[in-house]
Structure formats: C-alpha cells, structure tokens
Amino acid sequence: MRLGVNVDHVATVRQARGTFEPDPVAAAYAAERGGAAHITIHLREDRRHIQERDLEILSRTVAIGIDLEMAATGDMVAVALKYKPAFVTLVPERREELTTEGGLDVAAGRKRLADVVTELGEGGVPVSTFVEPAEEQIAASREVGAATVEIHTGSYANAAASERPARREEMAAAARFAASLGLRVSAGHGLTYYNVKPAAAIPELEELNIGHSIVARAMFVGLEEATRQMLALMRQARVGFE
Image: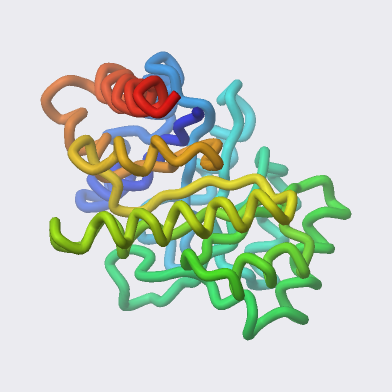
C-alpha cells in the first residue's frame, strides 16, 4: 500500500507570515526519504497555501511525482498541462471552506468533467476524482474517463466510535465497487495515526493520502519520521488483514 503525503499545511505556516519558510519543497524531500510514494498538493484558486512556484519547483525536482489536487476549471487545467504532474485529482472547491469538505459531484457534472478529463488525458495527465463512497459517484467517475477514484474518508474519520464500523464498511463497499469497474482506488481526508489502520486494511485500497496529521506529528518528530510512522501503521494493518 502506498502513502501520498500532502504538504499543503507546511505552506499554510509559511503563508501566515508571508515569508520563505517552512518550505514545502524541503518538506517533500523529507517525506520522500520517509517512504512517501508521491507528494500531494492542492493549488487552490485563491492561492491560500501552495503557490504556483511551489508546483513549478516540485515538478522539476521531486523524483516520486506530484498529485495535483485542483478544481475542474479552465485556468487550473492550463496550469496542469503546463507542469504535467504525475496525475491530477479533481476536487470541489469553495473559497470559504477551511479544507475540502466533501466529494466532487461527478454525477451532476458529467459533461463538463468528461471534457476536463479528456483535455487532461490528451495532454498526458491521468485523472483521479475525489468522491463520496457512493456507487453513483464512482460509476460516474468511470463514465467521464477517470482512471482512479479517491474515496472521501471524512464520514469515517469524523464519526463517533459507535458509528465508525458502519462508516468503515461503507468505505470498503465503495472500494470493492470501484475495483469491480476496473478503477484504481485510493482514499483520504481526516485520516490520523489513531484511525488509519481500519482504512488501510481494506484490500482494494491501493493508497492513502494524508496531510494534516503527518504535518502535525512532524512538529515533534520531523516529517521524515512522521511519514515512516504512518507507513508502519498502514503496513501493520495490511499484515493483520492478510
């Protein structure tokens, strides 16, 4: 199982003072040393944390590749085609939100999203969609041409302890359905060192994308070690499942 490390929150700290540190590029190198499979960044339209310069430098220097999270807009498609990340993840975006609050409604936006996926694909950029664990959204993602679906794990991560097993099964069912359609399957949002194992044990999930919890732990142990610790928990979950 692979781990994508999101370094947005490193850039959030930098932007709070409008200075040059901490550097998300340096954070990406540390995550790579810790075993990350790729680096995830969300280039928001309001540029609240990651800047286009970060994407430019990361695209030229990070060996493990970039997962560029972005809104499905013409401006962002142009950015993706300019820098050619390893892949793009289409996400919903609202300026007033603190972080991405839910999955993309692919079913409601089939025509527009199919055009975006086609344009990116013709430019050599594979596409993933960030969706709720719902069959309708997963089927629509396949219909518009996405190669991967990333299942939004917020309902699981934020659930009360008594409700979490049901939310985990909801995730697992969605992953099984996506895999049955021939899609690659990943998951992320709100996953921490304390709730990651049940998610990581879902066999159809090929990777998890985690940012805030890793960056938070990195304040005490460093980003390289924080990445290693998360990967160790994910691998323990897989060994337990197998």
